[in-house]
Length: 187
Image 1 (cartoon, rainbow, N blue to C red):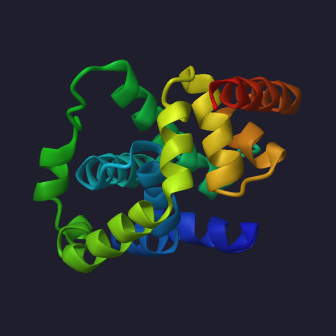
Image 2: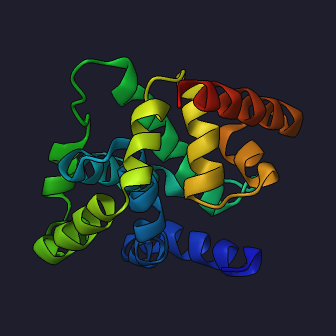
């Protein structure tokens, strides 16, 4: 989606909250996939994705173009939610009750969850190498997990990762290099 299209969509969301459905439709699968690949837990991933999009929905009216795209903003929210999960022993979405009460977000609750779950869990089981890397990845500091997951699982460029994580591009390169070296030493 071009920056102009994103700008129009954001303007529509400000005047018509139902327009957020287009944001959800366009970015839910990639953001959910990112979360799923980081957690490998379907139910937890759905909770974190729901919280991510709820926070985006509640804050879309205040979104301003400050050098970061709508996509990067959504990945940043998801990364923050993942960080909160990994920092706490028990992740409890803060706004889930609001989600359940909000008819604008009904789409989240009525997806064909069983089919989606089977497909995603099947893909995870089919990739033993992924599972081995993921297990070792979880042993790394979160700062390495984020950059490696975004680079290799989400196919983001270093500049996109820099934008998502609000870090200097040189820092991203350094974190990638150190994180990969740590992974190699584990195997």
